[in-house]
Amino acid sequence: MPILDPDTLAAIAARRDQWLGQGLCTQPADRSSAESAVIELYQRAGLKQPKFAWVHSPPAALKLIAEEGLSVPPIRFAGPHHSSAAIASLRHWAGERMDKRIDGRVGHKDRHQQLIRAAVWNSLRTSLHIGVATAMRTLLPSQAPGVTWYGQQDAHWVAYYDAFRHFGFASYLKPDAEILDLQATLVGATGWWWAFDDVCVMAERPSALHTEPTPDGIHNERRLHHLDQPALQFLDGNHVFVQHGTIVPDWVVLDPTVERINKERNIEIRRCAIERIGWDRYIETAELELVDRGDDPGNPESQLELHAHPADWGRTGRVLLVVNGSRERDGQRRRYGLHVPHWINSALNAAAWTYGLSGTDYAQLVRRT
Image 1 (cartoon, helix red, strand yellow):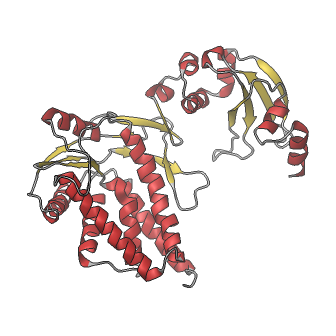
Image 2 (cartoon, rainbow, N blue to C red):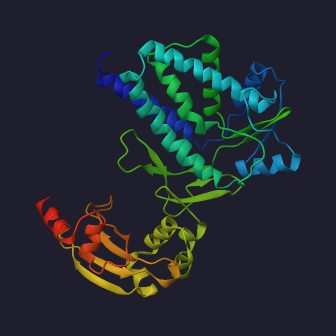
Image 3 (cartoon, helix red, strand yellow):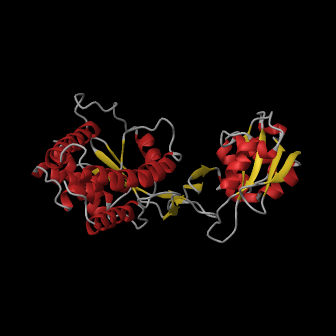
């Protein structure tokens, strides 16, 4: 198979970004289209048409499900014929058959297949399924009743099979193509939903969803982030704060203090909170002991600072404060802390340790580069 031409590559990226836009959409759900698609899925699964209960958010959906005593057994494709298992089976086997059509048309691990897997499936799954959906799950109880079905956060699955069909790399059997179309409708019409035998609980899409480009992403991967507001929010007030892809408690953004930082056991949350107030202020207020300071040979006019851990952190070790070698979008160079072992007494040796080098080798290496 010949290498894809630049125009086709650009077209695939543009098609992916259209699905990304659907996955990040914050417009009110198209309830009519969503209900019609769900009814069709129920019918294809041999189920009677359900009633619909709409709520403002996934947490509200789980509350309603619990109050109504709705539940289903774990999904087993060969198990009892209940709604969640039947719909799962429809999608599962449609995907299996579409995969075979893709393999048969383009050849196993063909360049088209590899490209679409990386540029479409992996990219959208990173942005939506791993990024947004993971944040969404923090709002739900650990033992959620019922089985969740994605709407817009399922865009990676739909977009992957859509790309092969849209660009003529594969064709599907009519029933499978129709299942794909129904899933595409749901991506474009609603957020999460839950299927039960007599009722389908539908959650509205988020009212706010803020993202930024993922560092080093090559296929327009996004991660959740907003500096001062929830990165994910629903009409009923349910929300999640996210700092550069790291899910954090509200206090990190709204009221970060040294006391809260020192009590925090999660390293990433602690890091975000410190960066929120600034390392200089944190070091001064927390009265961190300075162990050593020295010039950074690889970062002109910047210094390395080695500090002892606060006793409240509950772990031995030290913090190496460094200055980022590249500038942020505002032209500033961000300071950040790295954890190093407690036995290191030199700031230069601590920097070298993070690269697996001795202090002498590190200094020579960075001077050469």
